[in-house]
Amino acid sequence: MNIGDNIKLLRTHKKLTLKDLAEKATLSVSFISDIENGRRIPRLENLQKLAEALEVSISELTGEAIKIPSLNGVTLKTKNNKNGFLKPEEAEPELINHYRVLSNESKETLWNFILGLELAEKNKK
Image (cartoon, rainbow, N blue to C red; front, side, top):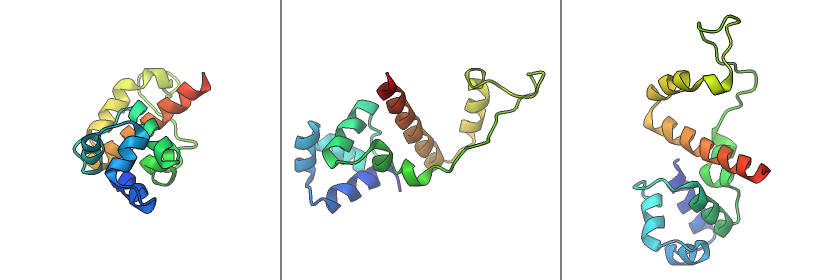
């Protein structure tokens, strides 16, 4: 399932029409329809509006609460560092290389996870 599928599932479960959700989220019907049909990926601020309108967290909205496996204990390694470990802020080139080999579905899952992390960071401030 992608984010559009999740939004549609939550919307229909709550017996909301596209128009109802658009009004609650202060977004256009066509924009939400495009998301539900996989034609657009919402920005963080729009994810927040949709989550609030559907009365769920962004993690629930994106499905990350159940889709993303735990990464506890995972450490990025590189040959360039004398102790074999790479600091997160130095990992960008490695992360990009790993991203390039992912399937489109995995890329979308990763994108949604990153959006959730950004929101969590924003809420910490």
